[in-house]
Image 1: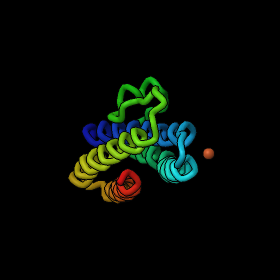
Image 2 (image 1 turned 90 degrees about the vertical axis):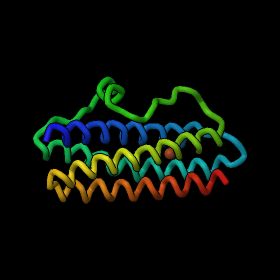
Image 3 (image 1 turned 60 degrees about the vertical axis):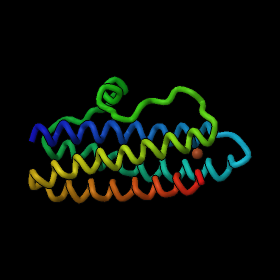
Length: 144
Ligand SMILES: [Fe+2]
């Protein structure tokens, strides 16, 4: 169960960091395609943000405490922080690479949850994977 709790905390901290980066790009994107990219990043951060509370509560359901500070998030997250203001194409490709990374991380956590017989949690993680597959599609299609 410790293995599952640790994996879930890493996936959660990474998801929160991904959410923050999508919101950052929604705020700070510039250029001729501003309106479309502002909306694209807006749709992504809203979808991911809606998953944050149930994600955290899944950690509590395993009788563990949820990480909830920037210090803990940066310790646990697999998604690198972005402090620079990037050009629009770099925002798209960085968020695409992060979304693909999230899909892989969620799949690893899904496998651990499945092996532990935590089917409800596995179902939640499968839905998160599917959501990231969709975000990756939208980002990849926009980059072409
Ligand atoms: Fe906004």
